[in-house]
Image 1 (cartoon, rainbow, N blue to C red):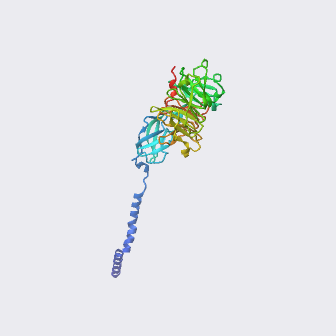
Image 2: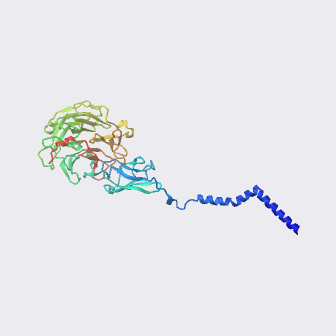
Image 3: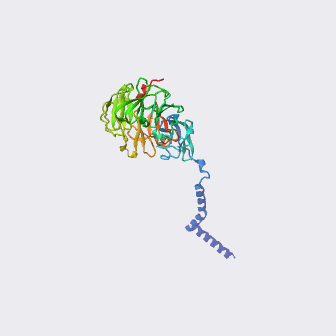
Length: 451
């Protein structure tokens, strides 16, 4: 028995010593005991948080500090700049900027500013406080906003017979404080007050000289003893001088003034000299057109543009009188006088591939000499402006602000630009656009005596 216990003790001791000494045994023990502990620790360390949004970092979110122009974008403002910090976090993306709930077109994005083009808003949003919002794309919530206003760009003026729109070909304003608008429709001359509410017939078929005046092409006030003389061109070799009064009962009948060739456009300089143009011809007559029945028209030589003269304008700039002439693809400028030295045209549509197929149907100038163009046959826009660098761009980038088809334009007094548009529905065919600048002075209106 003792010998048996001794053998067992010796066997156990040898077995234990072999297990402890063997490296393989140690590795097996380590794998069995230690590895599960490490695995559990790693799993716990890498486990995602139950609520990651709660630990989001707000650092660097966009903040709006101001807007330029301040307070509101008056009618005529073309661009609006949002100023702040961290505004360029999604450079090039436009779905995170809102003005009055609308996503505007973006011109430029920087960290400190975002420039947007004037947006088209619903009528109930114009002239009222609205929010400009910038959404932080990291949090998908509105992170900064500021109150702003956008002024209504303009409004339809007056009501004209809708069935015969094509005969509304010419318009002009007087220089009274209320700015009455005179418009030809067939052989009728309407006078509409500034509010577009009160409208009266100034001339009708019985007062005009012939049926040719059913196609009047230009109106302009000018000099005369009555101080209310309105001159009408009709594309014939004569123009009419009309004394404009508030009723049809008058003794001063229209006077026909003979011109050497057919003319369709006219304008006055500050001295009352009358400039006329048409069929490639230009003429000038002195202020006797206001009182004489047979003024002398002197040819202006040197004009090299198309025979299709679209419009002429006489503008005083830095004390010098200049004559602007437009044909269907060019606008030329020369110092006013007996010769026209146009040189290189200020506008040449053929030099702008993006305007291929467009033609000029009218133009005018603002007080700084910028040229506003009415272009036909463009698929989206009608009103363009010649920028300081010579480029020609749509006046408003958003095509929904103005009527899509503008046939003619005429600057009224101060900041009002009138657009004659065939796209306006109903009987309203003239849209008065309010701008942030004055137009170049129509010098013929200075001869109108106030009532």
